[in-house]
Image 1 (tube, rainbow, N blue to C red):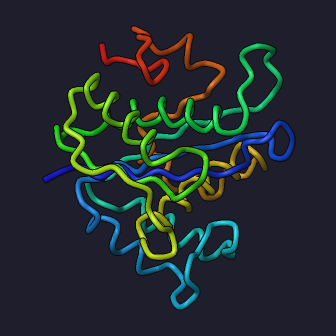
Image 2: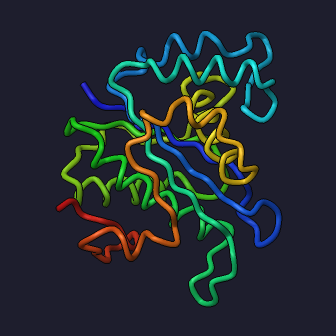
Length: 215
């Protein structure tokens, strides 16, 4: 049996627009752990997103998710302020964030076998996604069974991941933690991009960029 890592993001990747770009990962032992939460998503509307939901629905979904068994979350929060040569935007920002997030999610995962599903997007190709995930798997001693982009409107687990990303983005972008606070105890690691390179030890450069090894 493989642990499941579900990835989604909130905020935009451009130089302007939102102040923060957020990417989150749900790490769970099986999709069944998210079944009760997924049943609370509005039905008959196709893809359901955090930003299209009312506050009552958001709170109900977050409360249910806070009770999900064998489930943890990792968050990567990037403030897109100008940092000179260190500034990243667009596809580069997406890939750099994904690399750091997946590496930490793999450390959180307790099983050797993992499956990774990210929300479908045009920021990274399927081939590059597989390269990144396989390389990180070697570093973190994981066997990547599956790695693919999901179709959000067809996969409720990805829609649940969107609610996590939206909740964290709302805390950072709008200074509103009503939703993220509900799942605070499930968030085992919260990365701030300004601190990543200084706070996480044993940085190692690989073919996928900078990743972090456990100590």
